[in-house]
Image (cartoon, rainbow, N blue to C red; front, top):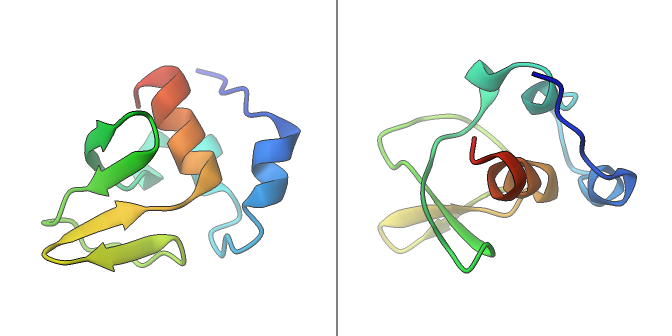
Length: 77
């Protein structure tokens, strides 16, 4: 599957240390457990992946990566 991500979204993801692997391989995705209003993306707490866009929030973690959020909102992946 070819993912189309807007250039503006990619440009906002300037802290990506993974070279945008998520746009090429779905096994590199952090797992989003649930999402609120297509804006707040809660991550699966059992998954241990290091990412500059993972923010700990109480007993949960949220994703702040513009590219990952766009993939989830647009493709449900």
